[in-house]
Length: 606
Image (cartoon, rainbow, N blue to C red; front, top):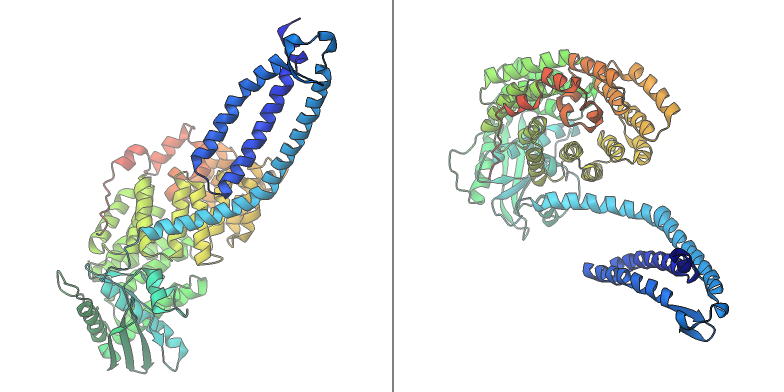
């Protein structure tokens, strides 16, 4: 009799199978139970070791012993004619089948019931972890040299004057932010609390500051009444308050006086001269505040009205550098949103930024505007690096410029530095939706799709319906191999071109060939003129390499912003092994050699 037949006769094979199946089931149950009771990790390891050690003993036991009606006996002491191993084998068959049914039932419940809730919990937990990680990097609230400037309340009879009270608050914030010894909460975070009924202590906790400056503005014709009060967060006491009744001609003196009083009350020791507000024509100033407010509404009509107000301000004060910078930013945004032809928008943005520097060579935001155009639209990275370096030297505390520098670092392939810079911004502007939206893209570009999803989820928590956030989430699902979830989620994205783009890639990844081919045929016809880079992305993801390179050429010629970050975009990963890829990167100034040669270093403020 062969060894294998003897193993079968003694039920050694069946005992081994039964042991392995039951061991797997025990481990699954132990994993769930130990996690729920938060047992130490070594407990599970010990159970796994004991289960593993038990297998050879089970095999030896089944070989040496046989179960008889009289109990266990050594196999060698049993007459073969009296052996009932075949009956024991049948019982083992039933045991194996029963355990397998239980195991399959457990697997089904775990996969289709528990797994979904775990995934949702994981997303929520990861989202919270990202927010907490960023918040942990913020400067602690107990620093006495920290302050948030809340939007001053509009007390004017005309509700439309709210842009003036908001604008005045922001100008005070910017003035205080120029004091290096003082930490000022970013405008986006401070203004996010507008019209929310929060206690001063809650505001201090959210913004991580020790003091709050609040007030009101009443404007009537050329007269203005401004009330300001400085409050200590810890006990809610007013450290200082003052009311100013002046004409608009003195509005800048009021700003200087308030800023000086805040610095004095917080006992800030200035290392240089106190910053002063720029003095311009009051009417031009009011138009500037209105234009800035309208530009932030970010729609076609608002941009047009904002541009008109900036131009009115410049007609009154031709040397108003900040108005030129605001106009340049509007033009760039109009081009990126498709509200102006890209080439026209870039021409106008360059002209406005250069005019801003002619009127004020120390305008850091004008340099940053030129850097953004050179980086994203022109693919002129050496020039962009020069502009951003100059901007940071002039405005080292500007979170907006540091955020732009983070994108520059990403473009240069300095991925860790890029994330570090943007996390620095997020830590100091913790409720800025745009920052988390950009951070999600950076995580995706650096091969961290789960973190990308969590950061985009945080952006949506801060601003439900934020354009681009659901697109990034769905894109990340495609990249990580969960195209089904991408199809479910992309319907929440307001940008239609992102809907069509992600849908096409997801259909390809799912192998739904007929649907994908229909989507691929329709996409260039619908979006080729405005979004050639996205067309190239669909072709690249689906392996249509020749078509992808053809559309990349279109994207470069039309200054498509997507080309600016193409080096690390996972959508184009299938092109990397093609001989044309390094030549293409070199043609747009993004080969590894070209990037390494660019000198760009960011020294963050203390």
